[in-house]
Image 1 (cartoon, rainbow, N blue to C red):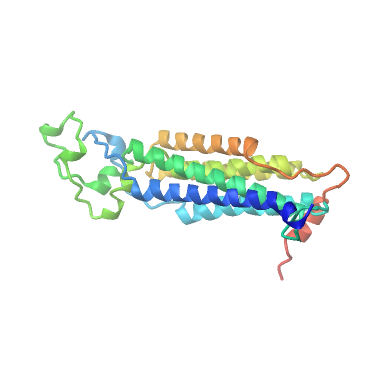
Image 2 (image 1 turned 90 degrees about the vertical axis):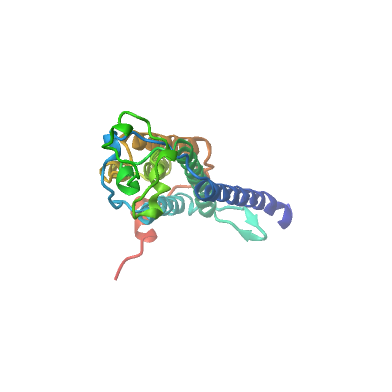
Length: 284
């Protein structure tokens, strides 16, 4: 097989993945920036909308950093430890592609595409439902007098009032309670990580550590979800719906959307002590 022929399958997969990633990224921006959420009305006596506005316990940058950083680090360490000693004959444009690099790329590509699926699904839900957040009345400060008999026991349409609150930059976001994007993202990233560790962290003597890491990942995601209720950003049903969505996408992407590079039977993976000592540089 010539150099050009051996490069075709690798280049084809890479190009297809790039086109999918670009298309999904455009979909994320379109559903988040160009699509105005449905303006649902409210009832004056709805106590679930009377909570004060609070800042996020888990900020968006923190959510992205941990949600992406921990799985990527796990992909790198596990694939290197499992496949480092496997001789790969695969080449792209004459350059040999190590098996652990292929494994890392396959895991990263499927994880990233799944994350884009979650983002788009969340944006669709928020814009279509348009459910007010628990701090809706505090942020909006509607122009009507809820103490007036005119508005008692009446569904108030979005055309019946205007928002007079000073936080005008939050007027659109206050209508995006269902479903919780934080919960969906945290569940997807951490549940995918837990499933990945179960399938790829296979060094002898690491079962207890593997389960501890999986439990830690689950706790991080669950803490993020619960914080959305205590921060008055979402109703509890929004959080459960978001967490369920993220979990489903994590299971589906790991089970049917991830191509893993199989370790050859005659190639033993590195002992766990060797992997940790070589993969993590010593701090001086």
